[in-house]
Structure formats: C-alpha cells, structure tokens
Amino acid sequence: GKNRDGKSQDGRSADGDSCDDDGSSDDDSDDHGSKDRDKRMTGGGSVFTTGKDRVTHGMELHCDATALPNNLEVNWGKGEKFHLDALSSVVCSDDPRIGPAKPVASFDTMVGLGTGSYNGRSGATVAFTFTDAGEPGRSDTATINIKDAGGRIVLTVSGSVSNGNQQAHGR
Image (cartoon, rainbow, N blue to C red; front, top):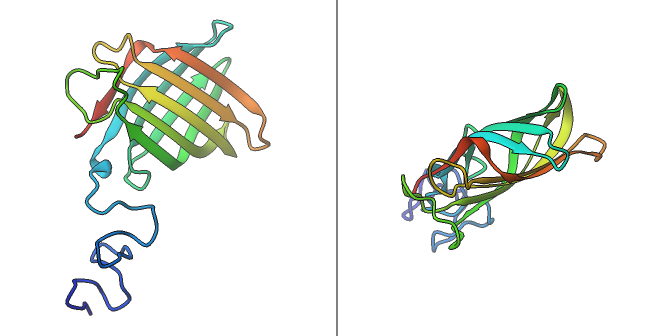
C-alpha cells in the first residue's frame, strides 16, 4: 500500500525509486523530474585516425543510461567492430562554444562509458564524446576509445565527423 506521501510502505515512489521526503533520491542515479530520459543523440558518420584509416559509427544514445534503446556501432579497419551492450554512464551538457542550431536542443555534448563486444567477444569497453555543432554536421566531432576484454586499446580516434551528422534531441 501507499502512505499519505504517495510512497509505498517500503519508502519507494510510484515509479519504484526510493525517494526522500523532499523528492530527492537516496542514490544519485535518478534525478526526479529530470527530462534526461527524453534527451538523446542520434546519427553518426566517419572520423579518420591519424593514419588516415576510416572509422564509421552509428548511434542512438540517451542522456539517461536507463532510458532505452542505447545503441552504438563502430566499424574500422579490415572488419574490426564494436557493438554497445550497455551504457554505463553518460553526461549531456551544453558547451557555450558550440551552437547546435536547429532543431534546438538543451545540450550539444555527450560524454559516456559503456560495455560491449569487440569482434563478437564480450567484455570490451568504450569511452566516447560526441558533439552536435549544427547542420549539416561538418563541425560535429567524435572521440571514441575502445579497449578489448583484456584492457588493450584497440581503437583511439578523434576528429571532425565527415559523411554524416550527429543530432542532439530534447529540451
């Protein structure tokens, strides 16, 4: 049952989160009233390594790691590939030096960490930063670092996105 505050008798709110009387969460994983679940970045394109190797990526990633779906695919070299299985953490922010233009979003930069598979083997990790600097995407940037299950760096790439567009959504 629920008490007069709308919480169940175990102290959880209707959505199942444990909340203090002021509406804050006992843990920092959920910001009650946050619209991060509605914010996401989509798109992708190509970025080139310092050796001029092409790295392609495609994504739909939310600013709340628990909001689904969260997809990231990265392909490079002669058949090298990374597939995101879980988004571990993510932060979306507005860099005042970047203007995402239209459609207007409340953020333009996404920084995240996740786990997935590298060439079909689980246990790989990814760290990424994506920016949306407006249309048609020529000023968008991507930084992607992938390690295999043994912790060995298998990809490090950072640069402007070409042949693509990263789009921030949500206010």
